[in-house]
Image (cartoon, rainbow, N blue to C red; front, side, top):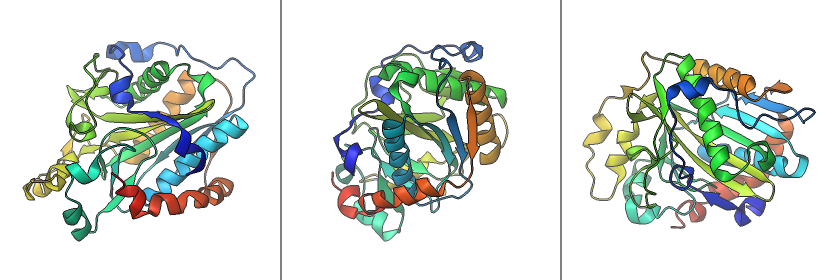
Length: 293
């Protein structure tokens, strides 16, 4: 995987160890605003849903560009087909029923970042790649990015807040959304955003899922010893009303531009990025990588 293979990664939900904030704090100015002049922040609302292996390859490519060229990116995207992703060091083969997953022909991928399993179905994924200097320390970046995301959800009418500090959960403690951790975005007492971070050199990648509907019950049916019954459970809308991915993506883009002032440039289909990402496709397509642990 090149640069990412040697990177330092963290499950931000557990390792940030940061106290939560009230929802009203989402309205405060950012503490890590870039000082002009700085390179522009690129906003890519990716209209093409992609397989898990392609999404992870693109995110790593954005990290590469953040390190090599000092670029900053906010990418918002979806997955097709729906996909189960594992954290980089998660013991997936021990916790999940590999034979059942393969028999159901579910999409799977292992992320370059830390953290625990996520079902990417009824959600929108965000990815931020930028020089570390834009956000400061690991904990500062985690809180700042989640504060921006919470502000976006609050603008959509959600009663968003950040979870208070909690004890770090081990990687085999269950799926990502099974329990909140300090600094994660909550709505009505439920975790709605889970994130993980990867750092390499002077650049960072933080990405995570923004649940539009809670379909994470699917993971219960894929756990070793679990029942197939959870597959039949209806999804639960976590916001105060049904909301589509495009509306949430626009809200996040607007919240980021308002909080992180400076030059913003919207892009659509960056062919240079997609071409470079193809070099990472074999890694993320590989069953040996996905089921390494």
